[in-house]
Length: 303
Length: 234
Image 1 (cartoon, rainbow over the protein chains, first blue to last red):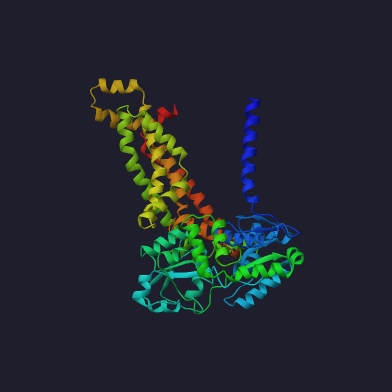
Image 2 (cartoon, each protein chain N blue to C red):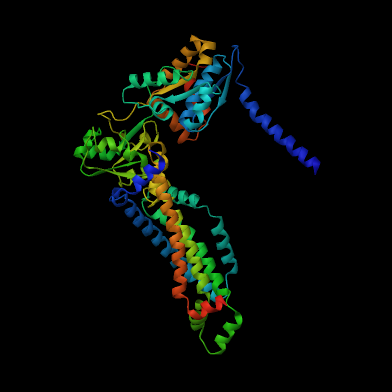
């Protein structure tokens, strides 16, 4: 019996060694300095973005360690400000409101300035934002857009009785339903239905049970199903540009070269690129690391 | 304001209870309607085969399998599964997916208890009934069902309590779920003061389950013949 347990432990140890071995092959750091711990939230897009930064850094010779799929901001922020994590792809609006209790607007410059000030006090730097955003969008089916001519949220006023399906908390938020039936849109013909799951909102939209559904701008299902994202012409939805945040320690240790490389990667991240990359992971079940690697190679960052 | 101050203010605002569509009274009505339909369907599906099989003293294996399956089914799992199937088939997720999930949860306790109730009737009593010239139908209606009634109703009670509690889970997935809706909404906006309605609605669901539990116990007093009750008490 003792022999069996020893054998089992041995097999497990081998298996573990084999797992970790796969990661070691790509990381041969040529630049001396502290290891850069790259983190991500626990959804596909965040993992893809974190992989992009991690692989770009590795390719340039920086020592990199990954701590991906970590969970929500409540879990990650304390580790980021304490220095256990060094780099995280963030979203301007959510970082400010959820992370710091701030009030992001639809204006990128002011929201970004607020976020920089908030992070600076914690020893974390906010680099340049990406052109792409993953923000709340309100979508209608292509058919609905065609027959009613609706292209913006304001246009909904002339679309008869319509219902918006959103997460339950959307109802009371000024950035969501409350900002549509009240100031600034004042839509009196818009009803609300709280549906927690995104997939169920999409099905309600397709079945014609609701006319408008709240989704995220980089959800590949939007292009897949031919939904039309309504223009937020009065600007109630906060900006959610992707922006990497990096600890002071790492920026101080590696300086301008590192910042320039990260900004170069960030500049490539458009909403369209994210739709495509998310689609490869969420619809085709490809590995986020491979998808990120392909993207970097195509754009001449690596390889 | 402390949590309790906000809670009292919330609970004493008329709007909280009477708002059309998502006031607590409207949600309570929705909750009871969903749970009621599910319980009725579960009973209609489970009772006839259970009673027939038990009367013929057949299908012991079936009864065991149903009982074990009933214990093993995770409520949220079955709910998500049915919702996913509905989405894939392009059906509405509004009403039926939740009902189907609740019925799947409600059938096993009703079936198992009804089956056990009737097979547990003393064979000597059945023999005496047949010796007196009762037909099989009479044996079932006049002997087995009355004697098994307390246990059979107990199955309905188990199913009702589970269905009432699980109905709230509907809000985790779709646009329904009665009193589960303020719970899910409150959880999603905890920092925005959602804690109040989360706690309030949770208390209501718990109270509702207790009420249903007590209610079915009272039902036993009303429908079970006095003689059978004395037998059980003795």
